[in-house]
Image (cartoon, rainbow, N blue to C red; front, top):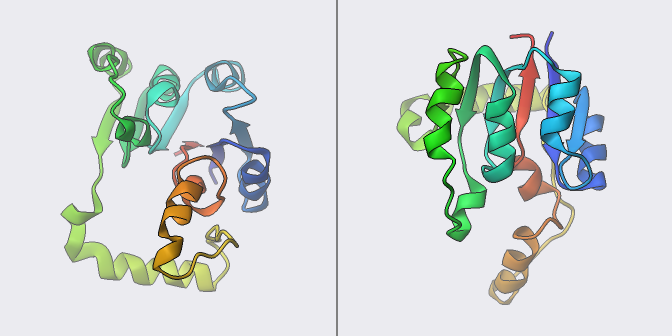
Length: 171
């Protein structure tokens, strides 16, 4: 099996990640991700699914294992127009570990969408995959501003949970 590390922004989300089987959860608002990974995983992490960017992305790249892989399928910290100068540091950090960074946009895999969706639904039905569903509901067009305000900060469980890094050891 794999040793799964999840990062998140709140204790409530940390509890959810633990409840669905994360072996180690790091709340990046209360714990230093870089220090935790260096201390607990001195050989680095083998596979990372990353959507956050910014300081979390830096910590991930600094702690990826030799021959490790980072799958980037989002960069939420960049959506607010913040300039990031980390790119010039990225190439040597990956190069000297023979590590790889791969982008993923689902639209490039349209032909594979249906079979993979069927597989995901099967895993959900078998309780092998547990999606996080936020209990807060917004109804009607008038609720759109409130819904947007809700998902942007760290209030909701569903949207922000899906935007967290997953670090996997043992692949």
